[in-house]
Image (cartoon, rainbow, N blue to C red; front, side, top):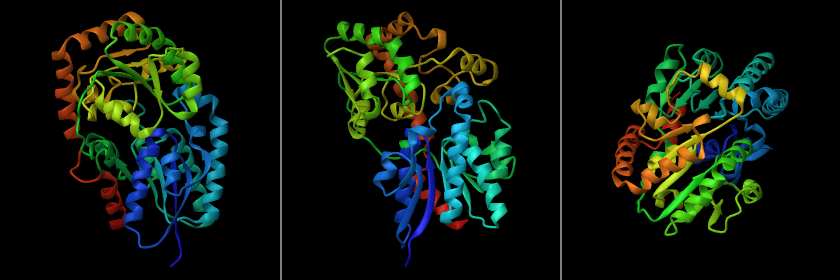
Amino acid sequence: MGERCYYILAGETSADILAAQLMCAIKKNSIRPINWIGIGGEKMEQLGLTSYRPISELSVIGILDAITSYFTLLQIAKEQVKQIIKSRPKAIFTVDTKQFSLKFAKLLRREMDEVGWNVPIIQFVAPTVWAWKKYRAKIFANLYDQLFVLFKFEKKYFDEYGLHTTWVGHQIFFDKVNIKKKNIICFLPGSREVEIMKNLSKMNKILNDISSEYPNFKFYILGFDHHKQMINQIIQNPKIKIITNFNLKQKIMMQSSLALASSGSVTLELSKYQTPMIVVYDTNYFTRLLIKLFVKVKFCSLINIFFNKEIIPELIFENFTYTSVMSEFKKLLNDKKLRNKQIKYMSIFSKKMLNKRNPAELLVEKIIKK
């Protein structure tokens, strides 16, 4: 039997992990060898992906970055569509990476119509239409054959427009862990260079002072290999270790008593590990203004959005200051009841994120049935 070709695209570090789990599930359910092509990161490449571009080239942050990167991303999308038409894969998967995926899917759908060839285009991880730009649900419905969502409440937004949508749950919460806390504090400044530079410049003095005030704790910055040199240039403190190994980072998050995290998918991992946290974030003035004008939700952390109250302290934009972060740090470190309150809600939240089945395997099962 010959190889079966699939195209898969992920443009974020968190998407690389989800896409790799999807690749494993598809391989498990296939009796034929699979040729994976597309764009992805380290996890996907380890499973045999031929990545036509580095995953970092698709990583944009905020409105301003998306505008300035528009023509570069458009060129990459055209290049990928050309490669797909040439390779004729059995299906196309786009994982997260919503801004790029939408443009890519439009071009691909148009080109497939022109050449008279058609295969399913499947999106895994929905755009946050419940937060802003609700009209994107209709656009996705016109372009995609199937959508798989992480959170149960997202399904209704796409059902309205007839898109075949399935809630599969979040893979992060599926695997069981044995949680044992230690005197560890971890700092997670983000996954993109721009946000890391901005967040770490604000975190620098906080890290120095916290590490001096709490000498019984170990301190770690959790990042990525390609950002390690930049982090070292900003944070010059021998008490603070930079960790980039994936498995070790997971272990440190699980063992940490407290985390200071940039807003993003990493807050879900910390919730799974029942690690109390403070969420921070800042961006450029233009993006900040647009978010304040158009984003409809009160919070940026999903656990706060889910419960509609501030379970986790959020210090965003002008509230992300040395004084405010230090104040929250000391409250949480000195008050076990506050930490336990977060842990209680994290436990409830984690259970609500599960669909009782392995999300990647459930997704593959639904594709096969379809």
